[in-house]
Image 1: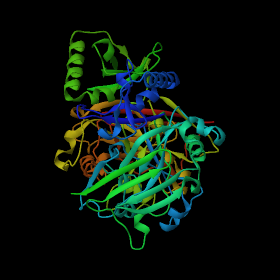
Image 2: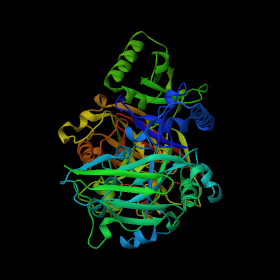
Image 3: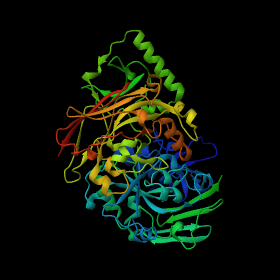
Image 4: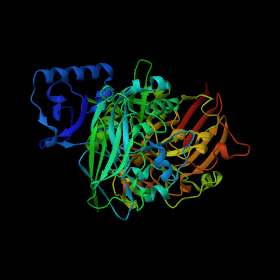
Length: 291
Length: 291
């Protein structure tokens, strides 16, 4: 099943929808006490999720009318996450191009919720704050139920689904500040979406192709099979010290090809368009404006 | 006004209470549609907060019966924050003892919500994960309304209140991993409380005395006047790149006297008791167990 937070011209706020064949089924149109967003659905537990799944199947079978998603506006595919964890240096090629050594433990930091934005939104930044804005294509993992001390073998049972993340980064701040939280958490620097796809539709998360296209050029082109640490290893590792709460988004690191490390370097500029695509999930487009 | 999340023996979950003369006034006992927690109250905006303030004043004047807080269990003074920002190296003495240079920009990272716990709770850790657990007394700042591009002069208008934070840290992980998020975000590593005190009762946040007492010894003893960057400067700085959402907790860094840097070093051990006290707010006690 595929979920998105969408709004029509009449909506003041995005609403949770199931996406079926590129058409939107708004949950609040087919069920009573519909969850306001995917976070609320996850917090309703397995019974709540089963109810949603059943209502969506029933509505689709009964031929309910649905409007094309392309007529709607996308908000971030995740809303109100309790936490956004990002993993650094998780593809050997990206680590070597940034002259990072692959550490014994995963490199783990956090992004801020103000940075979330949706597919086909416009991300702006001020030139006096950063002049080196870069893209990073990443597979996003959404935790479905509380995970503590989970083994690698069991870890994927705790994953609700997957999305596309563009971990936009102010490289100049990243290299002048030791901690990587602020430079990646400007408003609009974490586009996610267009949808969250449930784990059953993805199968093996280590067998997905990722690409980044900037203004028509393919600049990242890799498989999640190249991750240093797999999704299962990351979930297990993180759950050793922390309970991962439902709705936690884990952005699993970016492959080689980041703009900063290219010869010549690529920097996002006013009117750049970035599209990150992950197989089986979809394409996430971000429009850039320098203000 | 002072707020806490408290539970009696009969409660399954903590409830939001105003604390008046060490007695608890549960909001759901004096108002309809009471916010479930302080986060919900903050999200209800200024009108919602004014309504709470008015109901509490009315209930107190009418002599409603209130039970002593000491008979109740404290949960974290902040619940479901959208983000917990922590500031490193914000007191010159602590920076020099950790051999950190004071950077041009503030050192900014994030803590995870699973780490939150309340006054008089027990924080446990496994010896195979860390053997160097340390305390850090910090003034916690709770943002009251969305803050973006706020000047230093206006910054304190965006502060709802203050609390006590103990930024418990696995020093061995902090010094072996470049990013400081995981080592400070074990379950139970962010005690906050006992209360959130509204800004009007605090006055100048740069004139508060902090102490840390470990098993009867005073190991940190400083004034918030010694901060490298003031609360107003931090809020203004952070709001340049990010919108600070209501309920965001900013833990403003710890003064000198951290256990790791003492001669001989002090490490928290099984059955250590740590109490962090901040003037005008209160004392936050944490019991330690190694498992």
